[in-house]
Image (cartoon, rainbow, N blue to C red; front, side):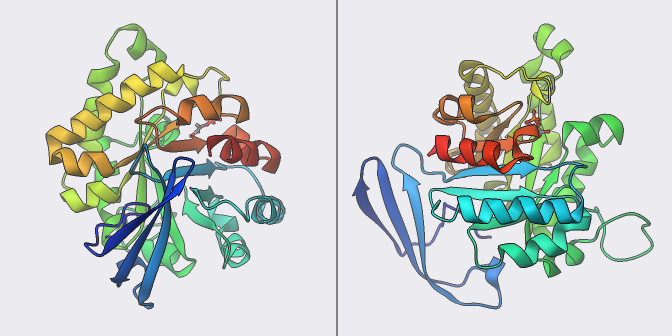
Amino acid sequence: MFVPGAPTASSRTRIDLGKGWMEEVSRGRLFPLYANRAVANVHVLLRMDKERKLIVAGNWKSNKTNSEAVALVTDLIRELAAVKEVDVVVCPAFTALSDVSKLILGSNIRLGAQNLSDSGYGAFTGEIAPGMLRELSVRYVILGHSERRQFQKESDALVAKKAANAHANNLIPIVCVGETLAEREANITEKVVESQTRGSLAGLTAEQVESTVLAYEPVWAIGTGKTATSAQAQEVHAFIRKVIVSMHGEAIARRVRIQYGGSVKGSNARELLQQPDIDGALVGGASLESKGFVEIIKNSI
Ligand code: PEP
């Protein structure tokens, strides 16, 4: 499986570009995600202090009609055209995926969906099968968001089934974990986050875990304007990485990207994303306007 920003090919060369950046060129690999295209040389920009490329995703939730989504992504394509250092992902509602997909073709913006069925095609009213997303060039799927855990009662076991389905169909899951305020106050943040991480990744192979994106989203910070301090977030991110070490070893854990989510905005993005174990952001409210989202991405570079 292709891990964006972290190819595993042996034919890798790294070129020091100075100012804390290096370019990694992987040669002669056929990336499964682009199964119909042989990609000869893949150029990836890496920050020298992290071997993981930043990933910032906008979760538009149940917002934006199709025409509003088209307007927003049109702005983003223009504003973010020069950004190479960050994987930028937008996750519109299902109704806007088709038009957004056509617009971003050839741009540096990637497409994500906000959910995925745990099954394939068939008699599953209201569900979205992986093939439907693949046809629209969707790359990422957000799974186990706290809103789905809370309102749709999604369990870790269901999230794990969906994550396995995503991987089986060359979609990259963004798996969300995070504690509620009551759990933080009861000092059980680590217990909750460990059990969600283990449960939501259960059954995945080491290679699948390596290419999964995790999102640590303290529930008390989502949509509330309250952000975890960079120290609080870093502490939990480092802990999640330790959990992955215990599941699959150091090498895999070092490559897993862990986003932070919870009231991220332009003014706090830089400090959060500079933390050693924070590899990007999952952004709700501030991704609904191009100015706010662009500011987050530019401030994270
Ligand atoms: C989210 O819902 O994933 C999220 C992080 O929302 P917000 O940025 O609005 O807190």
